[in-house]
Image (cartoon, rainbow, N blue to C red; front, side, top):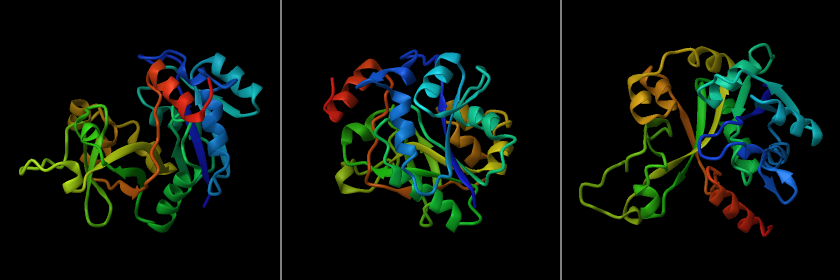
Length: 244
């Protein structure tokens, strides 16, 4: 069952334009992500789906494979759908371009989840929340799951809500890490759907899938990621890597 990784790389980020090419120790951030993804055992290839010639040039320079897509796509899933539409592949992994510390093993486990569960059309990664600050932060997406590790709901609000006002170390709660794997046919099926009511409310595209009655399989990891949304986040990554 052929699986590939696709890194959607958008130039016009609202909070940090051009962040995918931000320099980290002499390499653009997207190269760090690509190099991590290339270490995966379950991926036969890794592409970068981008919307700007500047990114194409940078990818060519470090030896990666890029696909130039339209600039109109509202989400990474839409950009990836265009990139793989005519490609013979079974599983497509959406690897965030702004997470240069991504663990290759987590990507492999995500592919394994779809290969083992033949009925699952889509899978994603979650991690237990251990910080009250994360639990209450609307920028951290929370998720609740059923006993079969399928997502029940995603929200920016603290879920599940503890009526007894317990702290996060007194009950189990999870955050969503923005890494997805899809069966290609399902990716091409759901991306043209109109935004659902819940998706529009929470501004979370995965709710379109749940609201339509489809399952999203989750795998739990203890490996955290550091997303780069601002120049301050970039400095945090550099500090973790021990570079200037």
